[in-house]
Image 1: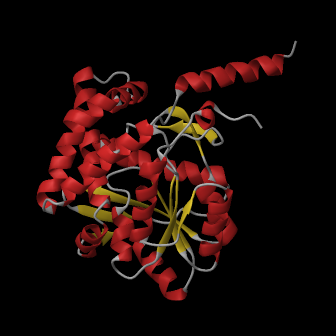
Image 2: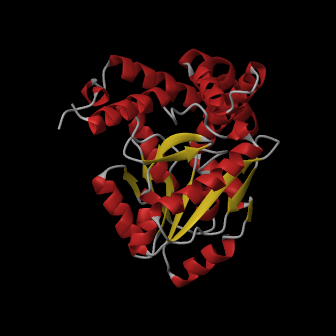
Image 3: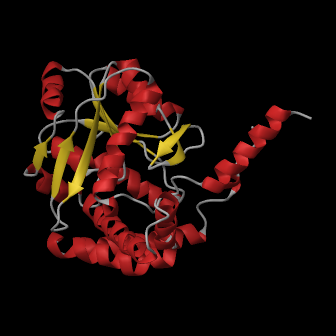
Length: 312
């Protein structure tokens, strides 16, 4: 099988090492500050310096224009800054695992799915949580871990291997078992859940292997992995969200009603609908900096498929 351009690109060189040193240094410096100072400071730094320099602000604005073309540039820019601010806050919050657990231990937990989760835990039945990059996506997991739950996960490795090393270690620190995305990791997560465990998956990233259906009104390939695993293991499929409060520091952990088992695509469309409702209510909390749609790539693929169908 031919390697993709990304696979051919060498990783682990001097540029990656230097980039990682800068990021590590920034994180270590921020962690020296009290929580109430470091979180807004990291949010402001991300919004005013990092996001504009890295092109993330432009990407967020482009995604907003793709979804809401009628929105003014001023409004898109305002939301993009909120997005970067939230991303900065989330990053530094999640790098202080003891601090996050302590704060989430006293957080409000609510939602229609909470009673079923507690019942499943008491009976040793499997639960698979599914969420998107909204608010702080680790906050609900931390809230449950702080209350004695053990919740595994599956993560997509970072392109920079130096950064990925401490990123993965940080995820393990919150709650094991954590598996790297891929066949082996997926099977490990399935075994954990099948044995009555709990796990979490994020579904709102671009993956060319996904099924294409609308997300925020635009076609986006979406993996059905979460639904497939829930069906295979008999697990409850529970969407959850860590909603950042208006003070920028606190969270509400919302556990929604489990998605009924059925066709995997229908299940993921329902999960998507739940996330869309959150985004529409507060678009600044979703990570618009991700390349979620890639419309030009999809158009090229559609033309190739059309040409193949027509034949010579």
